[in-house]
Amino acid sequence: MAESKDEILSPDNSEDNLKFRDPLISGLDASDGEMESLSLDASARSEPSVSRSSSLMGNLSRYDDCVDEETQDLFVVVDDPEKHTSTLEAYVTFRITTKTTRSEFDDSQFQVRRRYNDFLWLRQKLEEAYPTHLVPPLPEKHSLRRLDRFSPEFLKVRQQALQKFLTRLSNHPVLSFDKNFQVFLTAKAWEFQAHKKHGTGILSRMSDSIHNISASYMMKNRSPEFTLIYEYVQNFAEKFGVIDRISQRIVKEQTDYVLELCEWGPIYTLWSNSEDQLTTPLLAMSRAVDICSQALKETIETTEDNFSQPLKEYILYTDAIKAVLRRRDAIQMEYESTIDELNKKKDEREHVKISDQTYSIGAFLGKDPEDVKQQKQDKLEQQIEELTKKMEDLNDRTVCADTDLRVDMERWHKNKQKDVKELFIEAADRQILYYERCLKAWEDAIRAIQAKEVSHDTLESQGTENSPNKASSSEERGDTMEESSSTSEAHEGATNSEPSV
Image (cartoon, rainbow, N blue to C red; front, top):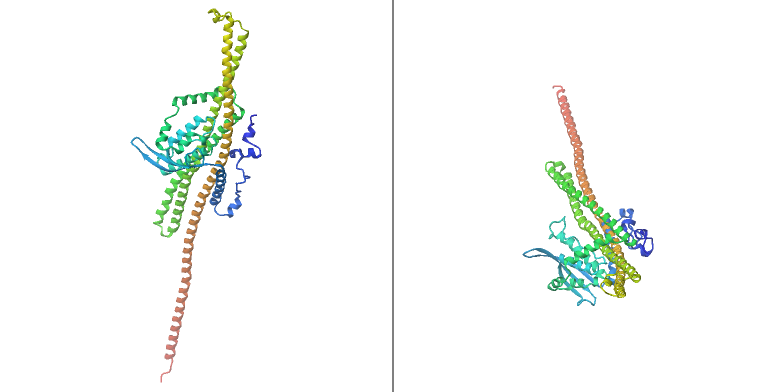
């Protein structure tokens, strides 16, 4: 029975359905066992929130690693990008190190180098071999933001995306056992190039693509379950697209703001050269503006790499899901058309049984009408038998396609919920770090300005205390001089008043 829309988009609290809850619809679930509670009161009393939320992401990662290590037997690492230059082109290869305990591999460890086009070849091969499985997307070949595809920053982002692609493939219970995937991980350069030459042509791939696209329009009725999946994926892509566009506008505005800050800070520095009494406050302002500018630059860069790129990846993921749905619809459409053709042949067989072949073309050519009738019946029986086998085969393929898509969508929902939570936590972490740095810069500026004011007030108060002391000393000296003058005058008067002998 097809699942209802409420069961898919708003599942109940049972253990099986809880893991499919979409964080964009139901919000982050604070009741998860591995999720720490983040209260505002606690954050005000604790250390800086960056370390706390970073440790939360570490807890999530450790939990996932523990689960993987118990069951995973294939580990792939992408690193060491290296630039190569030839007479016709320049390209970058990445080192791929594989460790495994699987018996299908000749050794337990392999190390090869692959370029981006090799990853594209692998994904195309996987789609051809497993059309009803969800193959993870690859990052876009060129970046509009970074025109230099050989810059260290671009290569770092590209390496992380390729690492995620191979990790998801190695964790897949079906795709990880593909022969082409094994060749990709283990074959030497010349062996790999020889293996790549054996493949389907571009014309057959184009015809399959056109057939899959037309199937979505020609199919009579899609299962309600997969109709809901298509609608959900469509809405999910629109939500992430809106978030991505808004974040790009914010980044643009922040970039313009950084340019203004870069012009604002030097003004205080130049002003301080002509104001001796305001040198310290002006330099404090300039230093705070420079710190805020640098913090915002780093925030913009990390937002592009760690927020915008994952958003684009999941938008590409929705395109991959739609492609799988189209291929699944093509199988169902072929199944439905086979059923219609089989019913027509059965009706035609019943019509031949009761028909009179006396006036048929075969009878006019001299054949016995009964022989003509028997030949038509035998031919119809053979066609009905072939169509019946084809219908059964297509029915099995349809059931397998439905099962494959359900299982892969279940895995996608799990990864999506974890990735979106980590994406939002890291975005919040990044904003906290930025505002903490700006707050500290302006608090240091205030302390520097206030310290200058205190020292100036101290000097003035000391000058005021010294002035009264000097005045009192002068007054004392004046009184002493007056007393000595009076004494001398009295002495002279006494001398003059004595009688002469």
